[in-house]
Length: 494
Image (cartoon, rainbow, N blue to C red; front, side):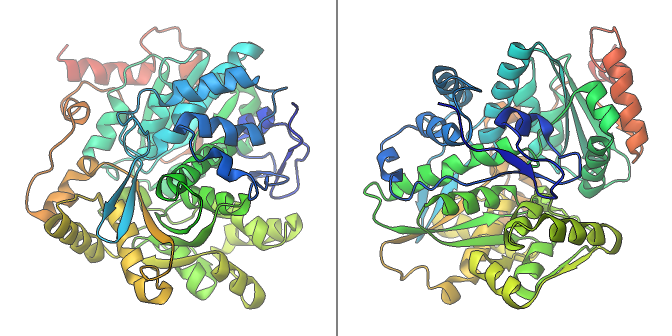
């Protein structure tokens, strides 16, 4: 049936959008993010999903946000099945008990990171719409490490798609960079932004989306979690994990989520709004703690980004946070737009009183410093013979810091689940520093160590990136990005 849900911009400049329009819009023309006008309430019926496979559950959840008039049921069902058949674990997202908490292992996809769950599906969704409409898409994304690889593996070889991924030069791990740059498909183009941070890369993406003529000319689309479909697909694993730990749907859960750009935990927030019995949502930050400061002090103030051993969370501004602020401000688009405009110029956004109290009811938080992360990795390796990546260690550390305050270990019929966001092998230096021994890489990571690559290095400039995208799209060279060919030849020894 046709979905009754429409989509709008958080800042009020777009409304009445279909699901397809929401997916392709990425960033709204007014600079806001796309949100559904309503969130389905499944509190009385979600138990019917308890025996479904991951792909079947993904289909059921996506069907609530996308009607059959846009994607026929049989097509969407097959799309979800296709999206997860390459995952190495039969459950797609297994959960393991470590001590008195659980780790939701989200790293069994092709790039060993949680973002595979959404981006494998998004790539297939894009391909379906483009093939049906006869259009071409230029995907543009910024990454602090894991989004880039997952986006590239989701878009590589897709018909009618060119994929450009920006990352800050020298601020991702070696394996993360190899995962991105070793994909030599003609439609994939990696750009290292010289002297930049992830926030700079993200600003370039936002600037280019705000250039509406350019956006239309190249058919710009988003893979970052500013794209609503990313959030929608991630809702699945919150429900799936609940059903695995409470097959009779008779308990509650707390999720501790390593958080940088606020997309992963936002999916948990939507799952809770849909009716999933979530007791607490824990925002776990590293030293780049803008979100922790907001939820404890009401101060969302931009600070310079600090490089840490958990680079995927080295973010100074959390793009997805605007979607939550929209709810917190009572869906008042003008208030939100004014606040975001002021934040862009001042780098400060403060709340107090009822707003802060509401935020603290929705989320709690903790900051895991560099030392917290290393100590947690070491302790879990020694005590449980379980190796955490530094990002997952942030989630575990936050759960431990809040153990007494939340009393999560003593609540009846309750489980604490930490989202395991990446395979530890992707951050071997940090893990080895903590444990004193090298990390064993899965074969699909090990083979990337010395793989040939292609990469363009550009200044920290939206104009330069715009020019590169236009030049690459118009180039007739079959080998992909003309700027990268010489680098590939050098690495191959030609």
